[in-house]
Length: 290
Image (cartoon, rainbow, N blue to C red; front, side, top):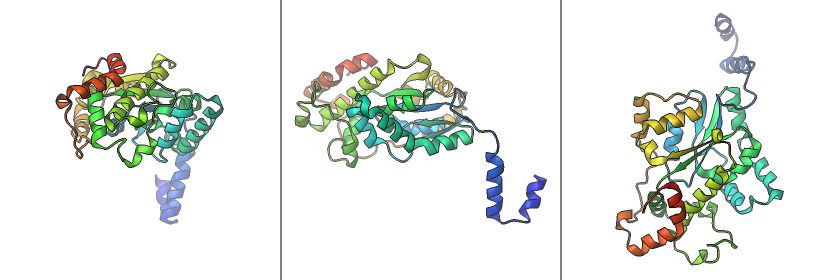
């Protein structure tokens, strides 16, 4: 410190900043992510509390946690859903992903931190991410379909929302592809919940158990201690104090406050039947009832 004070009298503030940066970055840096400094991506449908999740994980001292870092990956993720089975283009998605996130990864490693990204924008890029970062870990956050669909309807997903161009649609040859253009927004959002979670479950089967974590969104945001312990343990951190957690949970970040759509208890029987027809299989897989 004495040396730095002497230097400070002889150089400008800018020069001092540059000197401090050089002294810091001469220290050993991480060469790759590991279980102590993990690289983790959250997979979800969206509307499951990912912004709050990023704030929670930001309490972990061993990682930098981001919600929607730029550049956005939503368009690339949709293309990955449509074309990801084609091995000729899988490498393209991998290299595009690396180009989009490499600077952030490099920064985290320089500061000896792990990296966590919570928004759903990378969901369908998960296979490419796994190829790019072999030690990557994934968190699958699931929220009850009725509330995800209601929130999506209030945001006018598939009904003129500016981001609709980045949302997935059934492949033409799929079960639902031939009738998609005749569906209303409710049917499309129900399919989105079901198909996204089906896709993640299928991807899940290729992952080692220690590289994956399934979380119940409702329990996390109700402050369930068992779920919170599992979350922070997976990130390589102990659970922060209850006071810090409650301070974040009470903010209800990105809570839906605009738009209108009936509460699930007020849905007519015809709507319930449609919902069950489209999403029933996945609802059963996760133990949800209508």
